[in-house]
Length: 613
Image (cartoon, rainbow, N blue to C red; front, side, top):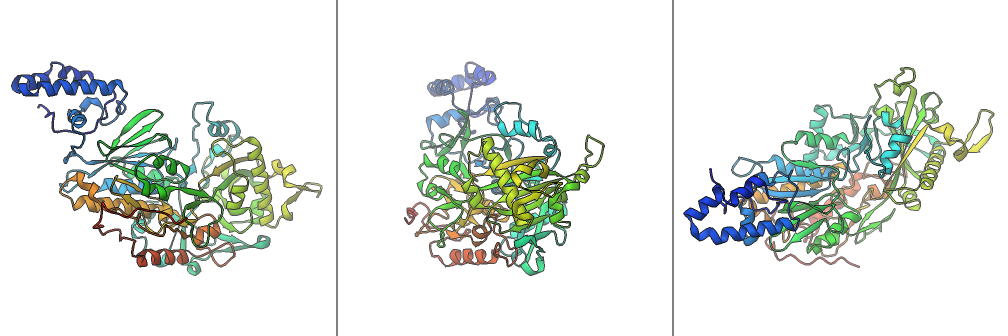
């Protein structure tokens, strides 16, 4: 069956001409058909060939492994070059999502699981690009037993894992997000989508509730007080195979619905370009074209997101991606997204000599503290008991060793912040020493000193090797949002580009999931009300029109420094309900905030966004 040159895919993603396709162009069935039966197309036909050859010589298009590779290239790529304004109304819209954290994966899942109006396939062909080498997840990240380092001498972090952490590499541990929680009183109204997802995870054994009295507050002097869910109206959960398994589960459940490309770094300086002549987004990584997309979604924040969008015409959206890095935020919320920085220290200690177990006995698993340099201490081997036997004697690893994670305060993170991808050894040493000393102080253990076998006191720095066997430091440079924008997501209909993330709802896994879900719903609603798939560009802009340009301070993350959580009545805690009420009031009372399910009648006449200086 012959393909019609004028009716097929419109995407010019050719990297090199496929021999089979090019031979047919130069005298095969396609050429014979159009030259003999319709001579008037001959001139058009040779122009198209010349355009494709020129395009190939300039390095255009995606790799030959792409699903749009030249094994089924489509002749309308040529028509697209000649008439770039032409849009197909038969193929699903191609969507690129940059960021494989919970927000990006939630959006991808929701977009790809719904069928088109014809019922034949999804209305969206979604590809997620993630920088993670081992697996997606972003700040919902875990190390798994047996994780293999990259075979390169240039990857400092992986080489350290291989050469310096033989014990840690045998354990499962979380080194960022430690738990999941949503207020019980709002499960069925504020976060219905995440509540359904959480229920599915629980039924599948992917998530479970923390045991009673295992989530605690560490008070002044080291007193440990369990957090009772009935008093906080909040239940705490964790993933059974590491918090990172939440992301991998989303991918596994949708592996036939959307594509995930791992270890892909879309360059912040030149990785994203808007094609004015076609209205498509071109993505590049390491100088190679990844593809051309109808819609672009930014699902991460920080300097990279800011720089990625800085060279595009979507200036209103880019204004909201500009970021400050600070441990605090003004009471009025400020006019820029504000992120803190946190250090994560993971240590292995002998179980029989564990100073942490003596101070934090079972059932303790995670504890919040208000120490100036700390925010959380958690026992990873109690969350994830190892069933593997050690090589030196066959004893179960969890019976012989303990793995603990210590999360710093935002103030500490800023004070000792270094280059995230290549922390100097002296910085690693200093951070390790200071966080261990702060841990001792928080637990009331000799005010940061310990005693040797002769009962002689010495500072923690000189006895650190007695306190732990291995220690690994991770800097999260763009860790937790301290303020939120009063919308659940952003969408610029002029350029078909959107943003999702926890900084648009609340700083938590729940917030990230909800933001991605709501953005997907916005696009699906427009798609379902349209006569053609390609008309999704008519979906209204959302979240760009708040005139005063002021963010809302998240009381939870600002005071706790980790997330918007309800943890009791101590000085370290705050209630999510306060932040939630504030956010909802702003969303409901501000006349400039459009309801997420309503189309803006002035889709292409939105006001210019100018943040208040």
